[in-house]
Image (cartoon, rainbow, N blue to C red; front, side):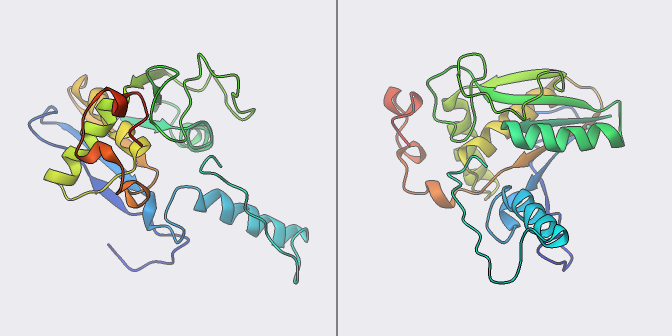
Length: 213
């Protein structure tokens, strides 16, 4: 990786496995934990700060209060969470109108994918969400995300957060349907916050239902 400013670096991770996907399909993921704060939320935070300074709403001596709780290819892009999907998806669509945008969400209301909503059952659909943007939506079970997190840690040395692992599951499913193309997804954060959770070693119903994290 080339040396870049923390605000401009764009690290890519190759997560493809030739035994799982066709020969002429490539799968890549953007590792957002290389941001200074360790997650995808750094980028909107930086944009708001820079906008505040530029417009004069953020001035010398003022304080910034952070109340976030973690919710803040041909090319295919598979993205989870409303803010990440809508913001990134809109920009990608302006760059390439033919790009397919695929949303990722849990397979039901009771799940362990932190920061991701099952939109069909939640009463808290963010105002930013644009249901017309997605070409398709892939639902991922908690156990599929847990298994992908364990697999990538074991075989690739990549430690992912749960929602990031769910994005990889979805990206692999898309890749398996293609004969040729590029699939790109976002790894929202690393496993730093999840290293003490039970899903790494215990696979049971309580873990699948969300009690395991």
